[in-house]
Image (cartoon, rainbow, N blue to C red; front, side, top):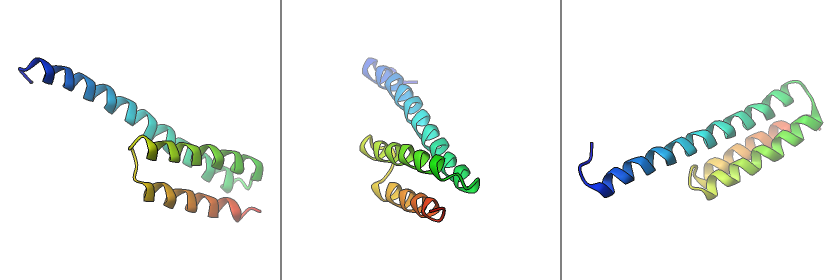
Length: 87
């Protein structure tokens, strides 16, 4: 446990940031799974809608520094390929 006042504050800030990042990562994983489930059910409209939300969340995770841009690009390519198999 830190003894310095500023480090105590920093520890609290880190816990808050960690919780926020964990929540965003969880939302993103759920959005990605929603796309894959819609593709598996062969529901074109739901798959496209889910893809749009997942792509948006991926872009936001890159801008907030949670994920690397290549990770987002790879996931979006993988998901769009899956959605395009339905069309």
